[in-house]
Structures are given as C-alpha cells and as structure tokens.
Length: 278
Image (cartoon, rainbow, N blue to C red; front, top):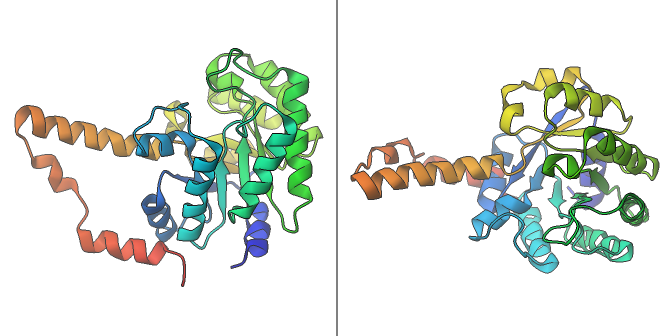
C-alpha cells in the first residue's frame, strides 16, 4: 500500500460514534506484534519511546531522533502510521510546519501535536500562539499530495494547567482552523470526556489509559468518540512485568514469573505476520 492509499485509509477510519483503536507501539517489535493482532493503524508514543531508550517522559529527545524512530516504525509495517510529535519540537509556527513536512517524508500519514511546552518556563502556549501553531500544521498537511491527518491536542487539561472549559475553547479553535482530529487526554471523569467530545464536530480521539481503561469500546462509541488511542499504556504494562518479575528474581530468587513468557516461535510467527511485505 503506497502512502497515498495509507493516508486515505487512515482518514477514513475516523468515524464519530464508530471508533477504531489507534494502537500505540513503543518500538518496532511492538508495532509488528500489534499489526499481526489486527491493528488497523499504528501510532508511536513519545513517552513509550523514551522509556524504551532509558529516558524519562518529557526528556530531551530531539526532533531528528523522534523522526528516525517514526521512520523505523513506518518501514516495519504495512498499515498507516501516525506519529506522536509532542509540541512539534519548536515554539515557532513555521518550524512546526517544517516538522509536519519532515514527518510526511518519513512515510507517516498523520501526527499528533500538543499545545504544552516540555521543560519550558510556561506550562502551555498562550491561546493565539497555540492556534497559530495548529493552523500552520494543518495548512502544511493540506498542501501535501496525499491525506495527512493532524490531531490537535489540548494537553493542559491532563497536566492541570487549565480546566475543561479552556480545553474545549482550544479544541473548538483548532477545529476552526481545520484540524482533522482533536484530542484532550485524561479529563477528570468520563462525563467530562463526553462533554468535551460532544463540544466539537471534528473526529475526537480518546485516550484509553488510567481510569478510562475501565470503559469498553462500545461505551466510547456511545459518546461519539472516533478513535481510541492507548498512549504509553502498553509500554508501561511491559515495564510493570519487567519490574515485578525482575524484583522477584533479584530479591527473592523466585523465577516463576518467567513461566508467563510467550514461546519464542509464537513471537517470531507474529512478528513475521505483522511485518511489512518485501
């Protein structure tokens, strides 16, 4: 499947009230595994990738490092791939636009961009600049010769930098400048999630992590969600197993946790099944 076909397919998957699961992979192996299990599209995860290379979430991973990681994932599978590109690795709208162009060159057909500032003096971009940055990203995406989906994120709600009303104000503004999908992760309740989702007409992404993992796909569909992402949840589950089993081994000499492992031949078969065709 060429990039144009992937872009068209990925955009078409965004159907409010009929969500697909955008499976976040933290490395090439997990991307292949998830594809083999039926994932219709793969997303990267900035924090999951940071964990995989021994860094904390929010660490200084450069734009080029992240784009190289995304390109590796794109080349590993045949399904559409969307990148978690944090804040676009710049405050400047033109540089955010450049990040989108470079993302498209890797073979990706979408990306998510945040309105918060990692390790900055301020926790988030002021409203007008946040909107200008998303406008630049959307205009660049729309000028590409294939469909490239921009997911505009209002992350200040998750970090506690602003409230639900401000998240809605930002998402509606991002929608107004043409964002193809909008996203405000981890509100305080499912009721807040529904309120945010119903405040916009653009396809809405819901993060299934933390308390929201208690809800089913059908329940997300009922409130109008168009896509469900996993963020770093699978990566954190992986690290939980390493922690718990490793702790039992090193502190108690208990190796029984290793019995939970998948047989190597099953892993290899799935990696082959989910890998890109040659």
